Image (tube, rainbow, N blue to C red; front, side):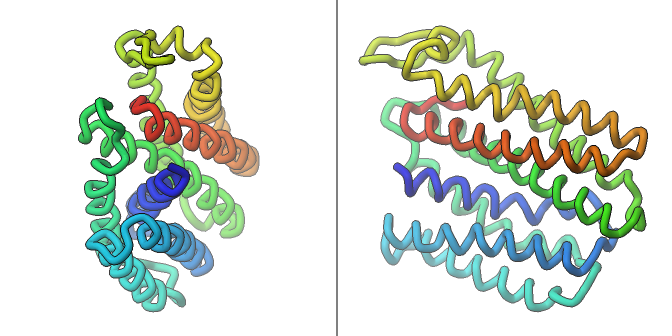
Length: 262
């Protein structure tokens, strides 16, 4: 299960992270910013490849991951010394990640769990939230490095996207509290009661750290960006990333172990 946890995290993050360059379409930032983004995506795919080898050996999924890694390496080499990128070209590797998520969902979903489409959807959403948080944080850091050369509007767009997906997850969780049934020793239990049970405490902590707290911080970040206090906004984003990553691990663990789609 640990391998599937790592695998789903790396694939969803690696597939979605490059797509966030569309939040500042056509606006060059810094060469080091682009290098960091490519290297972060490469790291995710590099971790996913040996996981697929261990789980499936030589398979279609392993081959797709290997091709994905090669394409990313080629793009990294091509754009290594450039500030500007072609968003359409940089988005191509994400196709491989999405295909791998489609193939991975049936293997992860426990017997009798939610439909596989729900697993795929939640892994995409679960990848979009950490990816948006990390991208916004790194963008905020490089915004300070550029000394305002990049319009603050583009950083605000990243934060707004993060707020939207956090709002979607919060809505999803609120509905699930009264509609989803968890099982304790084989007996069904409403999710809102399950969170107070010993088995569900970590899930409750994940909801608090991965959704509620970041949603409050996003509002604070948005307000600080309005008054152009980008240093304070970046500091809040760093704190938010830690909370979101911890919450994401909790969400994924309960999805894989218990089939709880949140």
